[in-house]
Image (cartoon, rainbow, N blue to C red; front, top):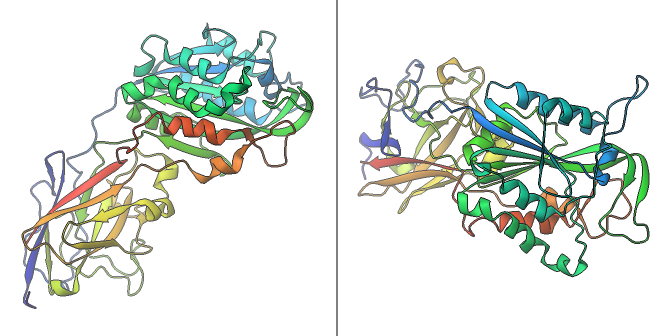
Length: 437
């Protein structure tokens, strides 16, 4: 290694497609100190194809235990949070241009029963006289996934997801029962999104644990309910991003099986002044030359390592997975026979940076110990596990509603969901760059 100018060529590839600026790569021999005016990056050649319209099924569990979320209101009363959110969810699904066709269903104590949008809306607004005995959770899931073409559609399930088996001996196998119910998910490569919500509840509460009381009258206590979305991974992500009403900070989220084969990304070799929102801190400058999106990285002394910026378009990911703090905790960078690390506090949204509007985020990587024979740098977001909120919301005794909403043995239910997927899950995405000197 010597201190003279040494070229490191950085080529981003995804599915065999090279990421460059479409013939506009800056090949000038600029040093790290060279000032180059920012150039607008060309759109990545890995931009996902235009998505086909979604097909959706929306299921509402209409059991006696759900009626309290949907009281009959008057001009003097306010709809519950459940009524407001589920009504808006149904309306947006029914009218969204992203959804070509929506079918509404009621989950009763038998196979799902088809409904119209108007009837579905009336039920949510308080006309719950059709409520029947609830179906045990595994059976409800099996019945939904057994419908024709269910594996090709987005299946949205609204329920309190209280699993109180009539045969208490099966409680010890709760996670296995859930896994078995999701066999279609395993075999068809589907994804599951879980959104945890809360709402006031007016009516008879039916806990899973029947002692000391089999049921309790409630007058506005807060109870949890859930919206599950099951379907092909890209369809689930699109539905959550484009159709589901914006989540609040109180909404709990978990995702399983979301993978994206094509997330646009590029190495961005652009001088960024200290005043730019993307400046990484310190003196604020990005210490290399070049302009726009390039495949050519040239540094003055590779023995000290190379810092460079990667631009990512993460619009396909759920909002929770686009948070810089989440990405900083979970992104992994690797170079076999080399060393690369994500620089602290370097993940930033591209909002307000016109040159990078084709992307949503930038981050800084420090590359050192270069493989002498070349190699591959990978930036990966591994599939997250079960989030911590699940354990916090899980309880062994739900007989008495608590100040903090709890769901009976939610941990076992979510363990069952996780176990429906392979032990080693595919990463959410991987960006790869070929290195050569």
